[in-house]
Image (tube, rainbow, N blue to C red; front, side, top):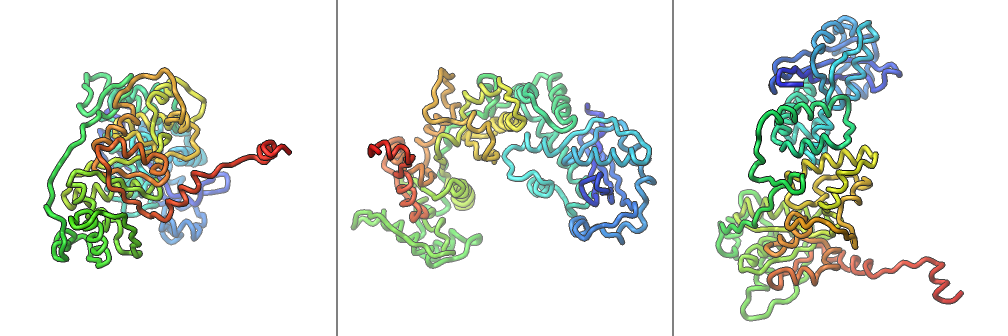
Amino acid sequence: MNQNTTYTVVDMETTGTSIKHGDHIIQFSVSFVKNNQIIDSYSTYINDGVEISEEISNLTGITSETIKNAPTFDQVAATIYKKLKNTVFVAHNVNFDFPFLNAFLEKVGFPELDIPAIDTVSLTQIFFPTLNSYRLSDLSSHFNIIHKHPHSSASDAAATAVLLIKITDKIKTIPQTTLKNILDINLELPQDTLSFISSIYQQKQSKKLELPNNLVNVEGIILKKVKSPQFIEKLKVPKFPKTKSKKLKLLEPGYQWRESQSKMMNAIYHNYTDSKKKPTNLIIEAPTGSGKTLGYLIPMAYLVQKGRPVVISTATIALQSQLQKTINHTLNEEFGFGFNSVILKGKNHYLDLNRFLLSLLIDDGNKQSQFIKAKILIWLTETDTGDLDELNLPKKAIIINQINYQAGFSDDNLDLGNYDFINRQTQMLKSADIVITNHNYLYQNARKINETLNQKPYLVVDEASTLSDVAFNSQQKHLWLGTIKKIVGE
């Protein structure tokens, strides 16, 4: 595979997934990619006289009427074989399309296509490791790829071709050291997918490329450089908007007016700024649909400007991420604040870089573990936090407990300074304006948070009704019946 290689990006619609059960190809499409550009395409319906089920028609939009005048596979096989010969076959799930097509070519007298084949699913999973979904329709949405007719092979092939170009562009930006580390892992990828990565690595090897300024080599792996916190003061509204007109000016045009939300904002802000009385603890029951998150975030944003940080505790880890997105998008981007926020979770959520370095030296024979290591090597060039939740890994993946921080785990490890993610989290906490944690972490670490911050913070407990359950569950102790009998002497 080189710059002059032609990649034939194939998608097919079939009556099912099993050749043994008599399933057939009803549409074949291919887009041709050369020099990282789409240069041509070909598509045809196929009618081998098989019945198309209602389920397949609903999925693909193809009916018996659609293919009524279409050629048989035997009639188009020579054209397909000629177009694909001496190319590299590409598909989104190549282990389905490539064997299925070869089986039908053999049925009508052609030899199997003896060409390399690569898989765009595996490539996107490795090189875009933080995405939530790798379905073609979701990837098309994420990358703004025009994909008007999902499950039409012509549209799918065209979208996959654009995806291949984006994957290639991404791999070309990856440092040589990272690519070599991936190639040194005993990876099992579909067909010749690993050779595709290797070919781009070999092209980069022929050039003397310096490491980008935002990356650093730490113990032989490439990480994103630690940045000093950036303090930006750019308030559109210099004072808390006390009146309805001023609140509307801040909220419009993206947010609608809510009377209960306004009252909540005023109650919180005045509680801490009224010079005639001392602040008190507030318990606020916000009605459904009142916009409670902005109801407490906006007044807290103005209070934080006075120099005291705020700790916000949510019920779940998932809500922590949602809250940080709201802070970054709404408070910082739309309203003009420039806050540093940090998420605090238990240590086991973070990558232990020392343990990960050790894992790279060990092949435990687990295909999934090796694949996850490759994803992590790419992710390390992008992450600021080392939070493994960013990767959306399978919860039961064996490797997680081999590479995350473990309570009580200690060894003669390398001193990685701020490239140790737990140490980095502590440093980020010291300079944070807004600290986002969860009830479990808050209950276990409230004293530590208070001691690490420069001064006594504000505290917001969101969904406070669940905090008592957390406290109660944390105090529970479980004893085996045999242990109880031993204690009471029976």
